[in-house]
Image (cartoon, rainbow, N blue to C red):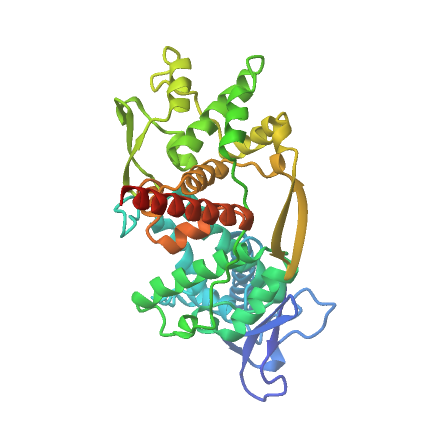
Length: 438
């Protein structure tokens, strides 16, 4: 940032306004100091101490106080600029932003009641920490708040890199096209990650619209869509789960505990945040009854024989008869280490994803794709393959629509064909039994 004072009319025969000129990042702001001076009392000699200040002359006896005032204006402007950088992750201010801040500091003009988009979102995130989900009645998950903050940071980064102003009025289709291209091509985001950012921006804009912070409805256009893509995730079938259970990990307590807790997830269908927080009070006889953290749904799950064996193992070690949990990140890391020990998971799996705007197919070993969420997918897919109705499974997994549930399943085309074949065979056998009875 560079500053200097210029006279509005340097050839004026009377007093003329003094302007503070601020230059930064190829931007320029001409700001009125509200001070005026006759050009004949203005120092234009660069060699003089009072260059671009009032001359030290008896003809202008108030020059000391006058120059002190100009020095204060310049110093305040620099302070305001530095504070903006500190408060905005080093983002350069736009001209109108800096002018508004100078008005507040130098002229005591009250800040506008209506915040800009970034200011609103910062307040939105702050309020979110004590906000409740209108559907569940529970406090918002820390993961949701983290997504809000990530979206805000990415928006600020975009504004700084592209040197564009981001505010309520610019969130339109032009912004959408430019921003999605930036996320895809320059940030190399996958489609689903890109979609989460757009979804969050729509959340911000909707909330601000309801509070009368803006009147822009462009973000409600069908073309301002949330991009999603079906992902290729794995599940473990019943045979693989059996091998995982039988894997001898007695010499590695760290991996044994992770394996056992993962199996609890595979046979309960609970999310990681739920199966790692099962307490003694949730277990009644042969059932687990727990209120899920994400959706606030109460689910009742019969305790599978595998889970019973695991609970028996830890019965006298922990209050809930289950091994203690560690972070999701570390659990995912250890699961791959465990999976590598299983020969059955050394099979090639193709994954397809659109990342950076490019559709790619990758080949991985199955164990390399093993994560905590594989447990829940394994539960749902194995039960579906066994013939249990999707409605019954949904009562446990908490899916609210069958469409969402079917997307969740990881049944291959070959497995679907076999399921249909088994269904037809069952129908034929039923018909034969009816004929015999007749």
